[in-house]
Image (cartoon, rainbow, N blue to C red; front, side):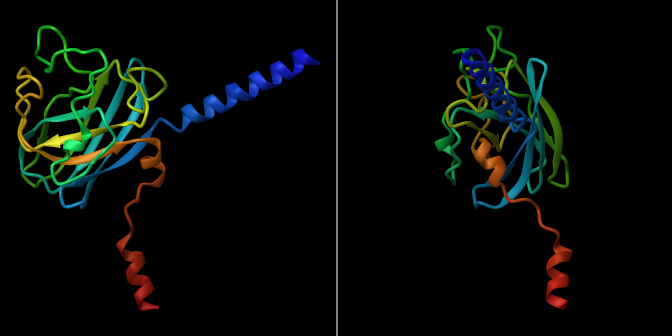
Length: 193
């Protein structure tokens, strides 16, 4: 009887863990500017030894912009300094072009089109959405920051990318409670009735 209870408990624990992991990927969060306006979304997906990061945003200056994962799930405007430094659980130097490696949260620059929009898919090799030291959801989560200038790929500690202009909190709670885009035709129909 005791073995049955242990097996049943083990199976339940496995199922709960599996369900929890299923809720972690894909994970969609919102991006906000310094005025707290919602300007886009980020969709994170667990891959094999990497997390895919799909960024869709609008209302930005055309050109190259640095983008990084930061260590805290805090987006207090207007400067977003509350997000802390780059996510760097291994204690590496900054920069994808640095000979001694890079921060886990370092990504290539975004290229914003002339119309102020960006729709790009990037990858974070070695990161995960599951449990562990390299999890973007460890402890209270992390954040994603877009800067007003490009990351030069080598300057310490942040690539000389300029001010932090857009922020999104990477947490399970943010994904679950995130406001979804509304259909403007729905409000028009309600007003007509």
